[in-house]
Image (cartoon, rainbow over all chains, first blue to last red):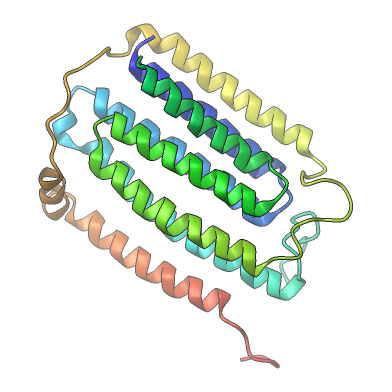
Length: 103
Length: 167
């Protein structure tokens, strides 16, 4: 197995773990944690392809990963802010009970 | 494949598994930090020093702390009395995740013989990344700066305490 295939398999496993967490957990914060894991798995793919690609000096994969990290940070801030706002309204973060968008 | 890769990969996957499986949400956040640290070590293994240290700074330093803050601010509601920590439709979610992993793993293993093997270490310094960010990628950089500002202001406004009886 080439090193690239190993990194891709680790990224696929992390993505599946994050997806399982986002789809099965009841707590909204744990769903956000699953989404963060999925974004990180995608970043690992970008970096691995950058490292073993034909033109690493072009920095394409690296730049994609860096911008992806920045966008993920913004997503986390807004997502957790929304969870806190919903908790103030409904006093729960249980997604099975949050079933309406009206406050 | 080096021994260090297997060790770090096992640490990362174990951290990720613990983050989605543990019952106590604070333990989940700590396991998530372990997974982020493992990913940073994987980036460093891939000779991506800047991305590795950015991962440590942004994820372990900011996102993990943000998650812990959110967990502590919503404390007392995270352990439902009825049922477990998983949703009623957990079997469907698990099946979807397993199917996605099976498809991705199959695709990687099918194309593994065609993937490039060991290539020489790329000679990219942090200075090169800075020059690229200020040159070719300056427009995306400005857009990300605007996005981060808008997201931070938006997050504060969304989470800000509302006055009684409307604004």
